[in-house]
Image (cartoon, rainbow, N blue to C red; front, top):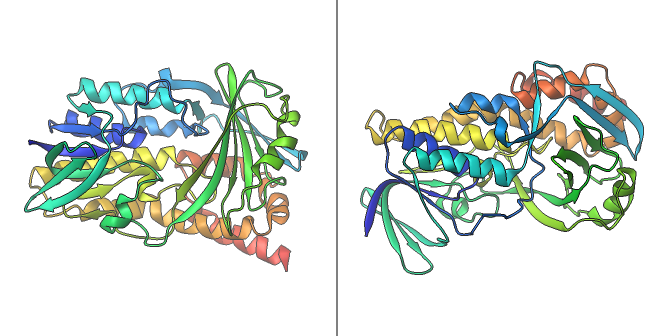
Length: 377
């Protein structure tokens, strides 16, 4: 049985980011990935604030398909609002399979290893080490574990990490060839067609990523009816593309993200923005902060991993608490929200600042909620 410093379950953006930073710090790291991910299309819109570059010493621009400078908002395909994003807050569109492969290659170059396919059957704490057993019977030991295998992971619940009651957004993703009517450097958000949510269209090289998401209530996703109307409006056949349905685990309260020798990061930690569905920035942020905490713990510079949970609460959770409140009001009264939120002259700049990390939801939440409730009443 081999022994290591850190085993990371999941080789997506979060897992590979943590692997890179831990390997770069000199730790023996192995990524455990249950699937063969090469040439696999990942159901993700791919929107990512350019500010994530701060967490990497290598350039991410080789994974960027397009830089968004303009956002087109509509209500039931009409009542258009065109917003110019500030130059100080660029927004990138990436293909997840390319981004993940880029970070993985850098992690391997730094000394990390990857085993795949490796489907984890059991995790057991034995003394001061973790023992991981695969479905095929292979066993590996490590001093620490990182749970990074996405929204579908059952390990956080088993190990008491993250919210006890998980809240999910229901999403449908479609990748299409060709640009249709979507102009270069422009993203599209449609609010009126989706009950308790919104639809989006992000340009990629040679195509478009389209998604439909619902965020509150029973999450009954009427995506097929939405796509029948939205796709022709974007210049595509109503039945074009292959649908991929998924459940996206979103932020649902302050909870511990660590235990003895183990942390949860990314979607497995329920960090996705409950209002704008932003998942890449918190995934990468949590991977970076988690790697720092593990590095200190492995070097005996701290007694436990509690600093990771504390830092994520301050840097992400406090803003998401307000984001959840905004989402609950906005998506219950979406037409009022569109008129008083999206159509306000300052809204595009505020959204860009939130996505870039320059501003948190707490900076605008009380005014937004009061405005929506007052108008509704």
